[in-house]
Length: 250
Image: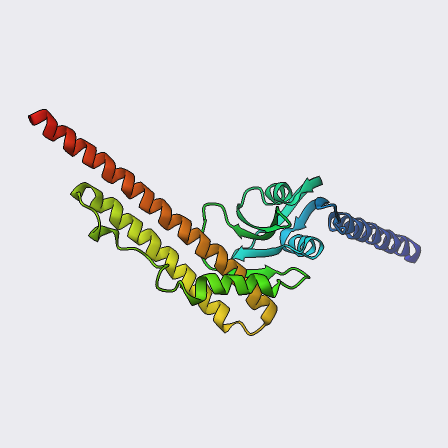
C-alpha cells in the first residue's frame, strides 16, 4: 500500500515539474529580448507580443529620437517585424493603429526624425508626457533658436485672431467663429505646455519639452495661416457673387 502511495506521489510531483517547466520556458520564449539593430539610419527589429513601452525605450536609446505619448495612454503589446527601414517608415509600421506625428529637423541639408508623438486612435491633440527620452541631450543651440523665435519678440504677434471683426459678409461669421475657437483651443494647449517648460527643473527634459513647444507653435502658425487663406478665398467668392448680382440687375 505504502509503495503504491509513493508511486502516485512521484507521478504527481513529476507531472507538476513538467507543467511548470512548460509554462516557464513558454514564458521565456514569449518574452524573449527583442532583436534590434540601428545601422546607417536603418532600423531592424523583431517583436512578438512585446509590451510597446519598453520597445520604444530601446528604440529611443539606439536612435536618439525623443518620444512623447498622450498623457494617461497605455499602448499595450505589439507584434511587428521591421527590416532595414528608415525611421519614418519604421515608426509608421511599429505604431500602426495609433495616431502618430513626427517632428523633423534639418541636419547638414537632410531632414531626420528627431521626435515622435503618439496618440490613441481617434485623438490628434492634448497633453503629452515625455515617457521615452533620447540618450543624447538636445542641443542647446536648437533650444536657444526656439526661445529666440517664439518666446522673446513675438509674444504680441502670435496669438488667436479675432476674425469676426474683419469679415465683411454675414455669411462668413459662422466660419470666422469656428476658426476663432480652433485657435483658442490650440493656444490653450500651447500655454499649458509652456507652463510645463517653465516648471521643469531638469535641463534635458526642459530642452525636450521646448522642442515639443516649438512644434506646437509652428503648428499654430500653420493653422492660423490656413484660416486666413480660407477666409480670403471666401471673401473673394462672396464679392464675386455680389458683383455679378449687381451687374445682372443693370
